[in-house]
Structure formats: structure tokens, C-alpha cells
Length: 581
Image (cartoon, rainbow, N blue to C red; front, side, top):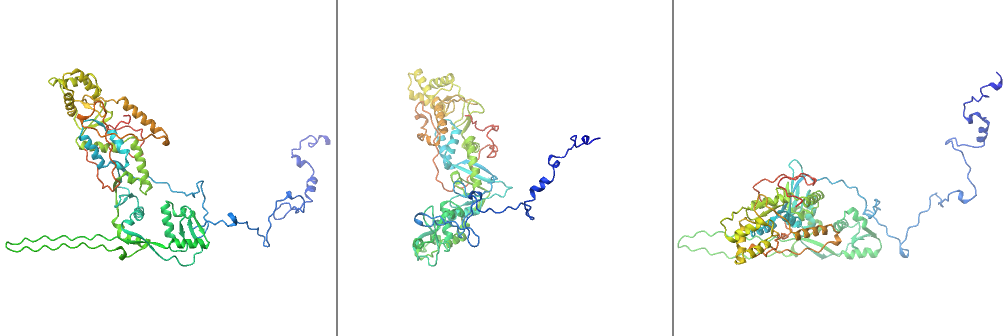
């Protein structure tokens, strides 16, 4: 085989293209270059001269090779901008959000494991019961429920911890506030009830003496806080932070330090008065007079002792004065044990529970009230039990799941075969015209019984309403007594409800004017014809501590309540109010 027939000549060289060339070409390319033995990188000579764009500009450095310090920003007229410092002089370096407040990671709030019930206030419930006892008109129970829900001061809330849990409720005996920890109640008592036991007064004092390099000033209120090295600084910061409703850590960021002598002197002049606390004098107790012994006949009766003069109150100037820390120490030692109590269940007004310092308790109350607005379960059963205890009649209209009504009469059918003329005519008209109004009935009887006085006819009809032979609803509609008497709403009432729903759907800035006050229902004989009777709104009770008063016992046990966060789309238990009414 000739050289032309070798595999190389036939194209059978499968090596890469760079390997088919001679190695001299690659060797000569890198012979003139030098490499660093430590890093293996090519060593390049430093550039001398050339265009300034070929290299990055370097800052001027001092003899030790350090870059120069940046010039400090200055305020107007060449004054240096004051540096915002913390309590110990260090600059706070906390991340900030868009609102300027530092971001704090908080632990999620655990739901409160306790039972909660919304109950009517006994004082406001008495107004409703007194109104029902004075009339025989049937009112819907849902209207009374809405009256209580619209007025938080007329409702009570009952918290009851489960036996297997360690939850306890701490309450303040002075105002009735409830919290989940003793520390929260103690803080509330120090902030709101300290002046109930101490007389607070301001007295002149000498300005602080010593060397104070700087003083702090609040940027929110413009008040002087004090010098960080003064003994009153910590207490002053805590007082102003509590007044602003901020944690001390956040409040310290609102302070600015002043080092000029004028500011230091201004702070000294602002604290030339001190607040002193003196214990209030207790009222002197008058001892009980001893009972006179029975004298024998002929013996002289002992002379009555002269009444003792009341003890004079100790003047305030003679009582010892304390500063804030000393007053708090005396308050914690002698007074707090008598103001704080703990229990497994408490009952207090809703308006007071909404101001509790415990967040889990407020959230549980908020969600429960929201569920009560949608489906009034707890308050409905409490009102129904109270009505049954007062011997009122409860019945449902139209069907077994219709709206529930309460009235001070017992529906009873009446046979009009041997009745007087006007009573028979009234029963016949209501039977022939079901769901007519009282005005329509009086107009028909006036035409049919033209020879009789209409006042006499109205008194006879009032007898039928009183005995339950004819049911009169709050809107004037009449119905005959049945298992589920018929009921309907008047067009004017439906129009008002539709307008109220549209007003609630509008934004807050377009809220309508408050509705006119509805007068209390007149007696049955004096009610004008055709005028509907509205239930009176319960008067607002003062926010005072309410003792735990359980609802009046009902003859039948109320069904068990569901959890406050139960979904609304659940099967409605029998006997519960229909939401569609």
C-alpha cells in the first residue's frame, strides 16, 4: 500500500481540530508572558499615564493609608444637625417601615379558650318587661334583640373558663375591668386609681444640682424629659410613654438631645415644682351606742350620754408626703391586695370589656358580637328565658319556623254564637278579611254598626285583644288565634327596612341622619287607629361595676350554644329565630 492509501490521507484522523496542528504555535504564544506562581494568574504591568478613563479614580489618603472622613451635614446658618441618640447615647439602628415606626416581629395571638355569652342588662331588661306588662300587643323578639345589640352599655358579657384549662380572669373591684393577667390589672390600677387613695399636689422645690452634659426633649409634645444621668429620667420617660400610648423603646426614638447651656437651664427651670402624694384620711367610724339596760320600777333611768363630737379630719399639710415611687410602693403593699380579685368566670358590661388591656379577650368579644349581629343566638335564648319566667306568651307566626313574638296574653279561640252584636261583627270581619289592620276593622264596624257609638265598639274590641281572641301585632295587623297565627308586614314598614339597608350599604361619610325617636306605646284604649306600636329602646345604663347576675331561670333548658367562630351556614336548631325574618 502506498502513502496515499494511509489512514491519515484517507481522513480517518478523529482527533479534535486543535490537536491536529503543531504544538509550536501554542508554545510561542505564551512564551513571552509571565505568571504568578502563587495564584497562577498572568502578571500585568501597571499602567503609567494614558487616558484617565482607563482606571477608576482613587480617593486621597492620609499618611497611614486611610481615606478622609466625610463632612458632617449641617443645618441652617451653619449649625450642626443634632444627633438623635438613645437612652445610653448609642444611635438606634432598627429597621424602619414606611410609617417611620420600627418593625417588630410579634408572636401570633392565641385564641382564648373560654366560653362567652351575651346577656341583657337587668336594668334595661326591666324597661322592656314593664312595657310588655302594660299592653296586650305582640312584639317580635328579634326587635328587642336588635335594641340590645345596638346599645353595648345595655348588654352584659359573661366569660367562663373551662375547668380543664388554666385560664383565670383578674378583675379590678373598683371599676370592674377584667384582664387575663395580674400585671395588667395592677398597671391599670396604678394608672387610674392611684389618685382615688392619694391627694396629689404640686409643691415648689429647688432645681436639680449637678453636672448635666445634655438633656432630652420630646419631639411629639415639646416637653422637657430630663437629663439621662438624673434619677428622674427613667420615671419621666415611662410616664410620657404611657401618656402617648407607645412602648418605651419606640418613645425613646422620638427624643432629641440638646447640649447647649440654654436648653439645660430651661429644663432646670421647668422642674422647680414637684408632685407629692399624701394618703387620704379615712373617715372616722362612729362607735355604736350601747343598748340601755332595763331599769327596775322606781329606779331612776340612767342619763343619756352626750353625743360625741365628730373627729376632725387631719389636715393635708400634716400628713407625710411621698414621691411617685414611694406612693406606688405603698399602693402595691397596702391597697392593691384589696382591689384585685381572680375568678374562673366574670360578668361585666360589653362597653367595659371592650377596653380590656388583654388582646385575646377583646378579640373573642369582637368576633362574638359580629356573630351575634348575623345570627343572635346567645342573646335570643337569654331574652326568651326571661320572658318565659315572667309568664309571657311566645309563639311563632305563619309557620313553625316563622318570626317569634312575645305578648302579655294567651291566644284562645272564641265562639261568637251567643256573643253581643259588636263582638260577633268584629270576629266575622277578621275571619272574612284575614291580616286586616285595626283601622280597617274600625272603619268597617263604623259603617255596619252606624247606630252604635264607636267608642263603645272600640272598648268591646279591646276586650277581644286582652283575652287573646284576636291577636294584634305591633304594626296594627290583626289575626285569629291559631297554632301559628298569620302575620304580614305593611308596605310602609318594608319600605323603611329597605331604606335602612341601603343606608347601611353607603360609605360612612354618606351616613344618613339619626332616626327620629319613637314614643312609648300608648295604652290599648288610647292607641290611635291605624298607628303601629314600636317597642321602646332600652335606656343606656351608666358604666359602673355590675355584679355577676345570672339570667332569670327559664322553665325549659336552652339548647347548647355553639362556638363563637362557628360558620353561619349551619343547620338552624329548632326554636331558634329565623334569620330571614
